[in-house]
Amino acid sequence: MAWPEPEVTLDRDGELLWHLQPRLAERVTLAWRVPPGWQPGPVSLTFQRQTFKLRDNLYGKSSWLLFQPAGRMATTPEGAP
Image 1 (cartoon, rainbow, N blue to C red):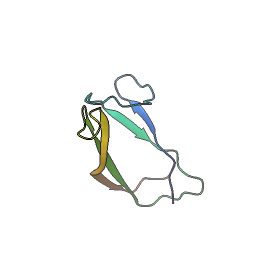
Image 2: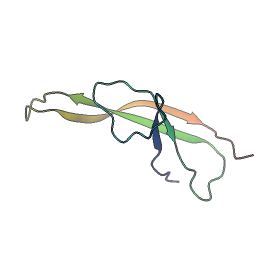
Image 3: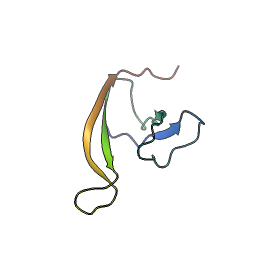
Image 4: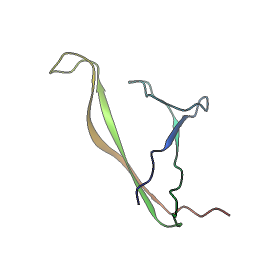
């Protein structure tokens, strides 16, 4: 089942995060709305990361490089009470 994009909130001020700033570490909270018809069961998430390069070798300007696996989480969420 496909899940919608999560809401990403900055932990330091509770505001929605629209863009990450390169080379600035932030703690964030990810929250997904449950798709219609979803039943409690196992969920597996794979996280990807991108590297920011201030000056790339091809164009000589800043850019985001390829996606790389960064982590995986498997859990079984409970249904609403």
